[in-house]
Image 1 (tube, one colour):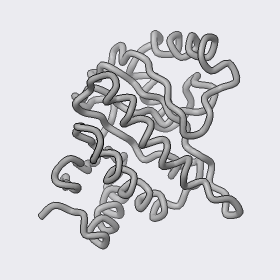
Image 2: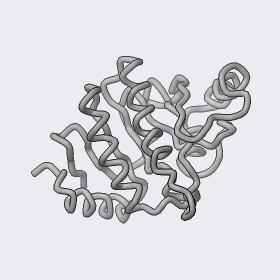
Image 3: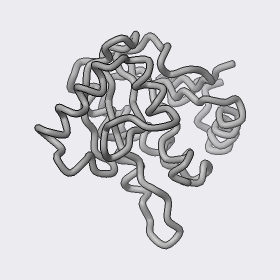
Image 4: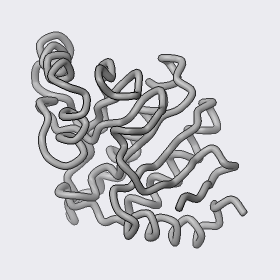
Length: 183
């Protein structure tokens, strides 16, 4: 089951982001860009070993100290159906420090890079809401606000791809409260 928001420019689904037929998928990466668990590991496995080599090259040439929170890096998609992988590092949640701007930058910068590369479609997983501990409700509001702002500047079709129905349904409930769900 899917639903759309923001004038049908954003589709929200449950599924496997590594199987989506889009121009770019966003990887919720870690600073090292070497792969890891969760969606990062799934993307690395599905893309094949060339992705790790491309990420290591990025570390050597552009990000020797690792990819900072909210920044983006681009690789080919290799064995994925997507042409590109846009890597971004979400912030680790901290009650004592507002990191909402860093989470917003993950989405904002990924959309800007996708537009720069002439992509027409991009898919995002939930960023920072897993092991990085960002509260889902807070993250959902940031995502909705950032997509609304960024899509006014970029002609892109966005898919928010949640791994489980529970997260998709929770996001839908927040979007309905905000009255941004297309009817």
